[in-house]
Image (tube, rainbow, N blue to C red; front, side, top):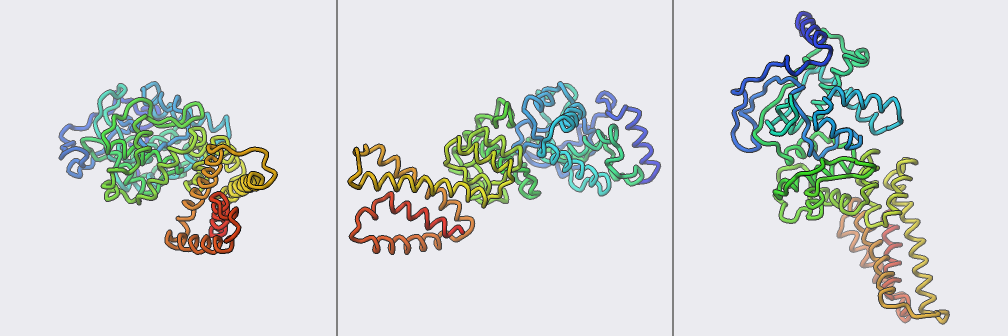
Amino acid sequence: MSPSRADRMKENFSLQGGRPQRRHIPEPQEESFPTSGPGKRAEELVISLPVDQLLPDRYQGRLRWPVDLKEIERLYRGEWDAQDFLDHIASRRQEEENPALDLAWEATVELARSILTEGQVAPITIARARDLPVGYQYVIETGEGRYWAYQLMRWLLTHDPESLDVPAEEWREDPGFIRAMAISEPSKLRQVAENEQRQSYASAIDRAVAYASMLAEEADYAIEGSPPGIRDGLLELPEAYWRAARRGLRGRKAVLQQVPAGARQIQRHLKLLTDLDPWVLARAKQYGLSEAQLRPLVGKAVEEQRQMVEKAVSEGLSSRAIEAEIRGGIEEEAGVILQEEEVYLGKEAKRELTLPEEVSRFLRSLTTAAARYEALLDKINENQVLALLEAELRSYDEAARGAQRARTPRRRVRHLLTLLGKINE
């Protein structure tokens, strides 16, 4: 960029107090937005738009800032503009220790520096929308990260210009204007496809919510109510997203041809939403826990989920460490079940267990075995696991011939738990 253009940009920015007023921003020409059908790009036409005319999609699956919904909703309602919101984020970073918030801020600063020095490599996609607060005309379909990078570079130029570490003469972009491509309607599927390509999810919960949003839209569910986010320490989603997560990929396999994600990956992430406690989901989102770290918690009691996720956060446990912690608890519980069985089957039995008690104890062990089996499928071929288990259980039954107690269903499941643990190691 020439020095004269850089000077003009800085002068324009400073004259408007570091925050361009919407009333001074020229409107783009309507002919800049020819459309070619729902969700399609507008003849690949890229235009430059005032960044203050854009608002993030409130139902975007990926949750950009790890803050309470009550805060982000002030932006969606027009009570705050983006600069007010960043003022609030900066204040929170000074007042409290929040690694997730710091990480989101630092990643956005890095992107802002990259855009200033290298230029905006790809345009964002936008669509006209109704019922937006006064001053906004377009909702962002893809590129919310770049939008926040522009907003943050403007905030930093006002509050902490040295942190950008980019001389004005080297700027490749004007902080007040962002390059965009128009579409007629936003698409959750396209949002997911871009985020998958960029690998830009901060946590497994971000990815899971994005998948749920995509499937809700594909199923034509009415997406309304509260936007996705954390409210009072719990993950909150539109009812359409919960419904889509419960339904999964049934009848929606066609989406696999349009997003770079496999069916198993999508189903595993959706299972986090349907099986984990909302408080656990919120903590996992805030602290960027991965799907591998959360998978061992699926199927566990709520109290155990909460204890383990808190331990994972405070001690920085890896997925293997979490599995080991849970395995220790499982083996202890299995030992208790086995001991109970021995007492029941032996002469010391004081009473007969009722059929519901028998079934309950058997199902507890079986559920544990199933969860451990699912965890193995990422590490070893399914046929290999089945072959190992079949051979070992056959050998176990032959060795136990004549000892009928050792061949009871719960004892076989107990042996199965041990085998799964050995294979995992």
